[in-house]
Amino acid sequence: MEESWDFEFLSRIADSCLSFISEFVDDWLANDMRVSIFKILLSWLIFSLIAIHFAWKVYGNTVNDMYYRQGTGQNGGTPEAATHLGRWESKAGEPPKSHRD
Image (cartoon, rainbow, N blue to C red; front, side, top):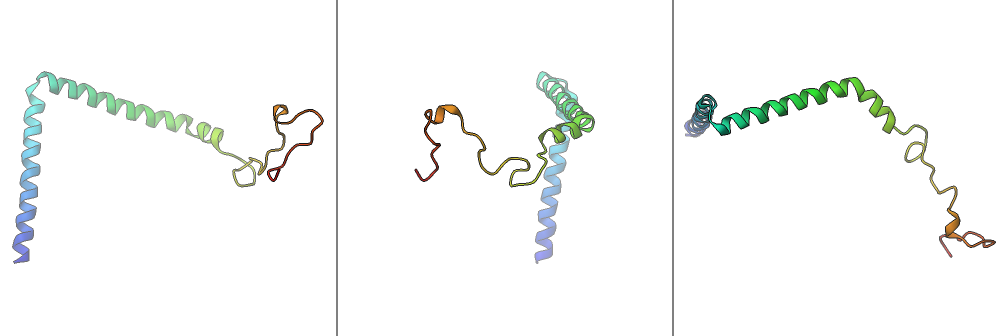
């Protein structure tokens, strides 16, 4: 009983896929305005993806090296604490405040 149900389910899926493909091919060959727009947008998408792929092949290592933080520590070369606070945060002659103050 289960085998016939599986076969029927797969048969329905195959029929729906074939009907979708046949309708798509009929629309593709129709040459109306929406098909023309779809062809233009599809070609633009494919061209853009190919251009991004080749650009990444050429410049990918350079971009990766720009954003790769070298050094040790939690964030690569970033220090754990601020080494110098701005002058506007403290008054003249007054010692800098810690977090506990």
